[in-house]
Length: 100
Image (cartoon, rainbow, N blue to C red; front, side):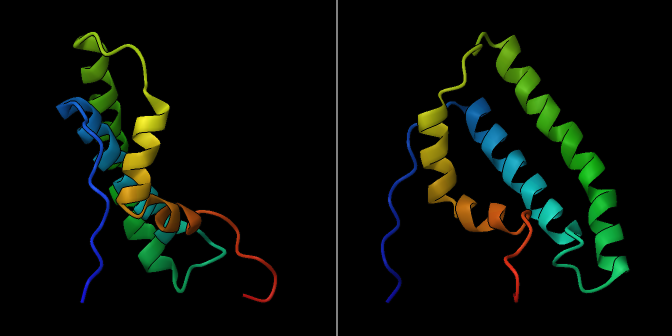
């Protein structure tokens, strides 16, 4: 049986877009990470896709700013990231410890 996940905190639509685009970019960076790479082609494809995701991430932040959402509620967004497995996903971006 799958355990119940904690509910996402209340987010504006723009905050939700920001979180989604950020995690997509993190996933791509994890695939590019040369310390974890299997082959160059996979990294190349991820790097090519990252360009578009960076634009989408910029657009999400620009939309928040245009709507007057000038403050980032870091605690709330961090809870959303943890709920969406952001800790594991972001760990793929870092250098693995020796021997792994």
